[in-house]
Each structure stands twice: as structure tokens, then as C-alpha cells.
Amino acid sequence: MQEYFYTLADFIGKQLQGNEVYLAEFTAEQSDFIRFNKAKIRQPGNVEQRYLLLDLIDGQRHINEQFTLSGELKIDYERIATSIRQLRNQLPHIPADPYLLYATEINSTESIGNNNLLAAPDAVNEILTATGDLVGIYAAGSIFTGFANSFGQRNWHSSYTFNFDWSLYHSKDKAVKSAYAGFEWNSADFTEKVSKSLNQLEILKQEPHIIQPGKYKVYLAPAAMFEIFQLLAWNSFGLKSHKTKDTALLRMLEGQNLHSSINMMENIKDGIAPTFQAQGFIKPEQVSLINQGIYDTALISPRSAKEYDVNTNGANDEEYPTSLDLAAGNFANDEILKELDTGI
Image 1: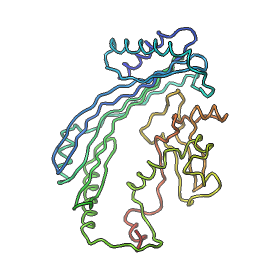
Image 2 (image 1 turned 30 degrees about the vertical axis):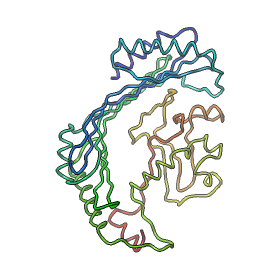
Image 3 (image 1 turned 90 degrees about the vertical axis):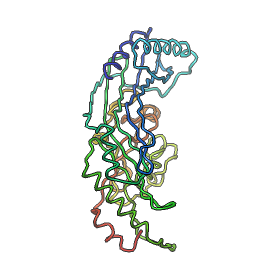
Image 4 (image 1 turned 180 degrees about the vertical axis):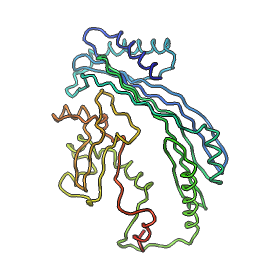
């Protein structure tokens, strides 16, 4: 896949005219998907897809197009050549972009993950043996991301991951939702997660308690925090949203702080996201967003960097975190109920 993309990148460079510059971002996946319902396989399948985002630049004018690739060089050469001709014809009619910024210094990188995934039939056997009745979806496969430009920069990132998201139902709306994800399947870890889910399901069988309004200690499980941060990530950590006052962290920008135990960062070093972005800038290993409850740094895209005259830290155009990391607290799992006492 890497050689295929680099071959396309070389071909793109040969199509340029005059002072034209190109930026190319390649994304692809090869994945298996298996849906389960009532402990039976309901919908197995696999996906293989390739996309190319091509940005043609001349001075401060630029225009881009994203299209699918077939994986066959002859066919894809034709698609690329057609796209470049069309973009070139439109480019003179596009207004200059005052905030256009892209990397011109060459920083080529390569990160190739190890494929330690279970074969799909083995994963199915593990799931059905351990869980019994459930509803869920298993997905596993490879993700590829590449970048190339006309200056000769080449970047490549590949990772092999799995994710099994499932629910165990008691009745009606009473269910326990769980997930297991990683790079290499560990039967003992998965069995432990299933065991915890079954224990939680037993709790749901008890008569419900009506909670009266009041102040309570509350514990939010990692799954709950994940849902919150998925929402919080949009328009919260980017410089643009901070400058336009369109951020959920507005009160923090005005001086209000969170609890001193809150530490949050964009942690590219320990995540699975690429270390580069669509304009060719390299991301730092870590960017501190909130430090001991105090707002620290924003994610800064190249456009925002140009607009507000600051340095970019490799954020994507949306300034959305791709590897958000919330530091752990001080309580072990087996201490949580004791600490909560009569909390929620």
C-alpha cells in the first residue's frame, strides 16, 4: 500500500506545470466487520477502500478534490490526471486565500504498525464462547494514512487495531454496554471485561431506586467520559474557537479553573493517530491542553496560525483532537464504591 501511494505521488509531481504545488493526503482501510444479535452472527462483511485528497496550489490560490481510488495504477493514473486538469481549469477563478499555509521544509516520516490481530473466525469463536447472549459489532483491520507534496516530502502511517462494542440485555431498556479494543487480543483481559459486564447486569435486575433531587458524589465510568469528550472535542480545544468565543471552555479562558486533578493532553506519542497532517506539518508528541485544572494550550491549525500570527502545532483543519488523553485519578477501581458511599 505504501509503495502504491508513493508511486501515485511521483506521478502527480510529473503532471504539474509552472509554479504549481501539490499536497496529497491518502487514506485507506482493509477491515472486517461482524454484527452479532442474540449470540449469533447476523452480518459478516469486509471493507477495502482508498481515498486521495489532492490540493493544487498556485501562489495563494488553491483548490482541492477528494476521490476514490481503485488500487489499479493504470486506472488511478487516469483519475488523477483528469482531476488535475479540472482543478487547473478552475484555479484562475478561485480567489486568493490569505490564510493558506503549508509545509515547505521536508520532514519525511514512517511509522509501520505490527499486525497482531486475530483472524476473524478466531475472534468470533472467542466472543461467542465468552459472552453468550449479546448484541454487538466487532471490527478489526488496518488503517493507512499517507502524505506527499511536490517538495519531496513523504509520510506514512499504518496501524492494525480491533474494537468489539457490545451490550448485554436484561429486559426492555436495562442493558450493560461494554467495549474491548486494542492492538492484540488478550483472552484473559476480554474474559475479565465480560465477567464485569455480567456482574453489572445482575445489579440491573434489582428493583430501581428513585433518586431525590440533591447533591451527590458521582462516579462517571470511562465509557461515560468517552461520550462526554466526544461531544466536548468539537469546537472546544481549537485556537479558532477560542478567538471567536465559540468554545465550551470559554469560562476557562476567562479565568475559571477545573479541579487541580484534571490533566488533559493531545497525546500523539501513545495513540494510533498519524504524526502528520494534511498540509505536511509534523505534530509534536504531546500538547498540554489542560494542566492541573488550568487552561494551557490550544490546538492550532495552519490556517489559524496564519490568521492569528502564531506557530502551528500540527492540528488538523477542524482543530479537533485525534488522540485525546485524560490523566488517571487517584482511586483504584476496587476503591470507587467505598469512596462514593451513598453517591451515584
